[in-house]
Image 1 (tube, helix red, strand yellow):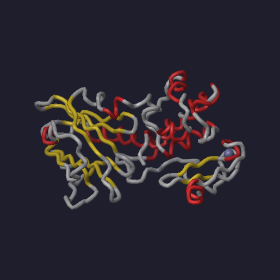
Image 2 (cartoon, rainbow, N blue to C red):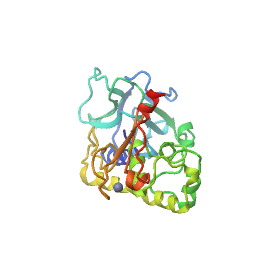
Image 3 (cartoon, protein in one colour):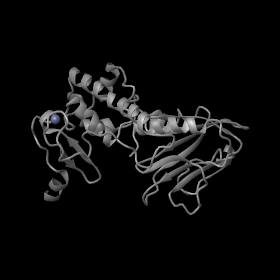
Image 4 (cartoon, protein in one colour):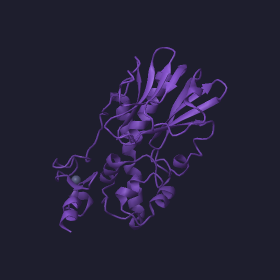
Length: 286
Ligand SMILES: [Zn+2]
């Protein structure tokens, strides 16, 4: 699942690959993927890519020129979407294609989605409309670079468990399941502690823990070439590492499984030695 570091490196690579590329045509074979109709996707024809940026986990491809002056393609990759540049055009039978933007130089920017579900989406917006989009305007402060301590403390001062709280884009933007595990492991804090119960030291530990996002981006800068791969080389130390020894203390990494995701942690350093119950099992036993 692409989170802040993966979307950041994607945006950087797309910027270098596409800046100045002129759009020949654009289409949306994924019928439900394009969530806007005005301006139409055809308005991109003749415009050139001026850059790519992101808000939280949402990449934005920017276009300039033509009668519209400026248009932004805001994308939500959901769990299985990828934004990639290809040298050749996709066959329209490529069932993973949701949005295709074809350039006059023969290349193609594709929003693809793996799996059977169509959940990724894109919106084509006029200049200045991205910031007002309901999803973008409700984002909390960006998780990287970390917000100032008082702002972070305020964002996390909620009576909710830390793991879902960190993943709530309205509280803090850019974190998903993978990086929530990593940040809390770095901070040596329990995923089951409540945000409202954090001490000042705890908030400072999360602040420091957020630096794993920057380290991941640095890692991607080193190992990812011009084209980000389908599967990112995630530098994870705790997420999905159950059964392996904790890199710091050697204790076996534990898991709590939920119906659609899992939380990993080091019991020695994060939950006071306590191994938490498997939520799938406890639900069955109720
Ligand atoms: Zn440990």
